[in-house]
Length: 217
Figure 1 (cartoon, rainbow, N blue to C red):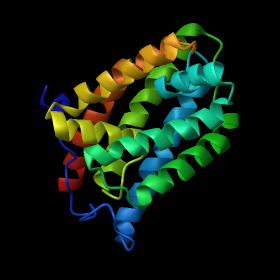
Figure 2: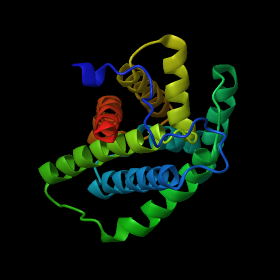
Figure 3: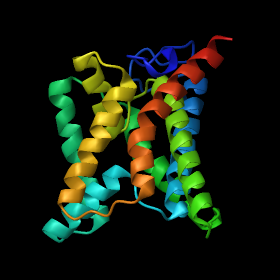
């Protein structure tokens, strides 16, 4: 159970000393980009499964129906609001915060047409599970690089530091809260939404544990 009780992001030999680092080591930059690329691929795999959206997309859709803006516009505005919440949590942005938006979006755009779109329901569910696990493992890679988390992951690590609770618990609480708000506003919930909400916390925790253990060998 120790793998699911991690309470902070581990540090390795290739981790940046601080998030606000404009000249990181080549290996650190590579691991950051690798993690973000795999993160985008995982999100794309979930989308291609066609059995629901991730919790934050449900929230964006709900706000879109409420205020009349597009889901893309609401996603951007939600990200800005989340970054504002970083201030009381004393979270530090970095180049990873910016690259998070660019690389993940680019990978989703590039990979989605080439991914399988299964017809069988069980295969759809399996694909959603695989995508969620990949997002969690990828989070472990790019968070350990310590070059600044994305808006949502920064919220997770900030709340974890303040509460002292395991990362898996904090992430699950955030995702379930977001689903509840999005659903109340009219967002669409599917089986992949629930898989992501309940699975992403343990997946991120397992990713952090695995990447840290591999790096120490």
